[in-house]
Image 1 (cartoon, rainbow, N blue to C red):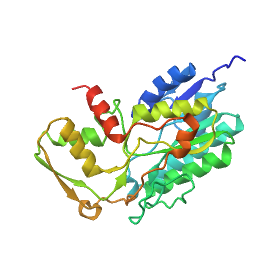
Image 2: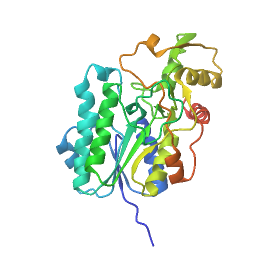
Image 3: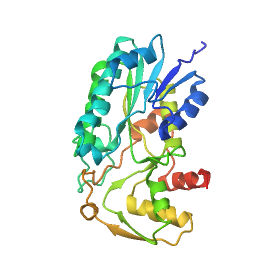
Image 4: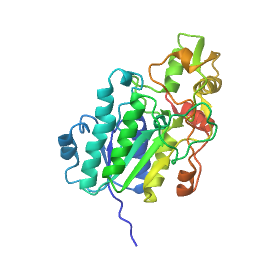
Length: 292
């Protein structure tokens, strides 16, 4: 039986994850990719969604989001306009037109209390601790409510080669700071698994191939802290930078972050038949591939 690949509309084209997803989906699915940038689709506006997707029949992948975690505390309306109500608009459209929706969410929807030491699976009850996290969880609920055929992907701390200078990512921020500083203070009490968009994109493409639906955790393997990640980056880059470990309280960010949000990806592994690379391996490949 010949399988006819469904075209993919990729919302948020040009971003770190979307750039790698475009290549991964093209290779895995041999599908026509319809890249949609913010200027081509504004999910906060239902009319914009209708205009961009009119006549489209296939899979919609949404990587668009309001990701300014601390700023969301000051402007919750903007965070919810995109991450919740924008996703509601998109979900309503996909549900009405019988389109599969793949939506990117975040580990931040889980409270990640400090007493936790076991990776969190998809059955863990969400308990968002910030405006950003609450808006992302609301988006998940709208996808589940409106779209029978959906995939919700929770991931963590994404970094990719398509990082813009304006937004960057954690690794690029650390490397930029070394140009003017010889010592950095980095939070060491938030346990998670920062993930390379190349690996996450490949896993999502494989997951779509299986026709799976529902909620999946998708990150690199292992666990670390932001402080340990920074030290690994500097070690690999052979940079003599002193990294001082500090607490979240000492850093003083406006938005609360999970203390422990290491995601259990066993469900993903059983679906695609493999485990994603360890976070150290991912960081090394990222650094080797980034332009110097």
